Image 1 (cartoon, rainbow, N blue to C red):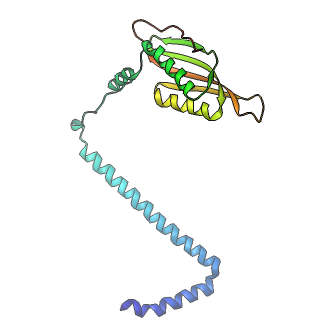
Image 2: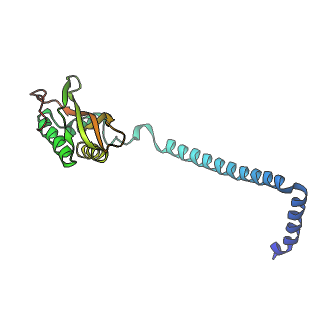
Image 3: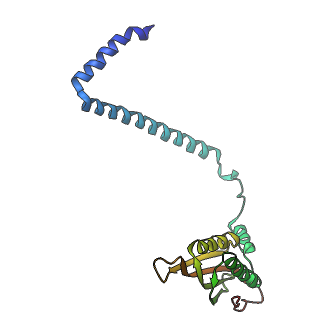
Length: 194
């Protein structure tokens, strides 16, 4: 009931503000109100963050910290355990060749280089693989290889074509396969399928 009695007064104030401020002044007033609302929200958010930080400081007493769920050395062990060994290299390369064949790509003789890192206990196996085929097939090959081999990385891809209107591309894939060294050392260089 009290609101109804103030409506004529608010209506009169609105008409008076329009008459004196005009559209530009009202826009400025609106921006001022928006800034006030956003400032209040920011202050409220900062106040809430400070309250949560204070609660965390009082609840986490120095002698009562929870033990970490996994130590960094455990993560490192899990990382090394997930790596395929150098004994798996022929199988992994065969998987690369078969995946290229599934995408109907022509493989040209590639170059392979084993870079053992005895200190880290890993073998970085570089594969430089020239392929010939359609762009979609090359992208499909790269996508499938990355999905099937989590320890494979793409170092570079070079694309070229003989003519602008040609749908066939020549690509050179520079792949890096990370393997765990085993006691037998790095595997020998495999041959691409004929």
